Amino acid sequence: MSMTLRPARKTDAAELAQLVNMAGEGMPLALWTGMAEEGQDPWEVGKARAERDEGSFSWRNAVVAEVDGAVAGMVITYKTAAEPEEITPDTPPVFVPLIALENKAPETCYVNVLATMPQHRRKGVARQLMAQAEEGKPANGMSLIVAEGNATARAFYEGLGYRETARAAVVEGEGWRTDHKDWILINKR
View 1 (cartoon, one colour):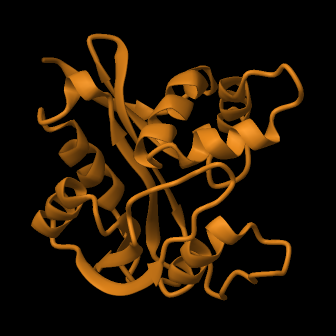
View 2 (cartoon, one colour):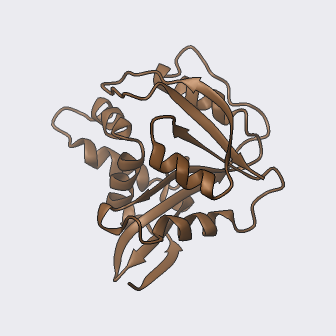
């Protein structure tokens, strides 16, 4: 297997949307479905969001793992703000616990998404992407949020030295349901 890591391109947007939805366990697709105009494919909404030049889910924040010329996985990172993001009354409830947890990790390199295509799992793709993400990490370290019921992901991150620092109850909504009870903020210095 010949793998290369490279900055994402705008032309990777369809694959980025697919990977974001995998990592988000269907939450992104549920949100895109709610955002879609009548007759519009929700996947096109996700692709358009990935094509944006700004925002946390932007191709500009992604590094792609490519195997034999095809996207095998990706990681999206950004630096969290020094000051907490305001949670307003119009913040969708499903995002409130996620924003609250991210606010507890100021000025860290936040791993917004890490995902690998199913046929490339357990081949070192995610490990290589995380190593790339951790290069030059800020003094406050790395942070990410994982679902408490995702034992595979939790074991992977614990093996990389990440430790739980906070929890918040999952809020369902926007056409999205899950068996997970808590979101877990984990950090690595």
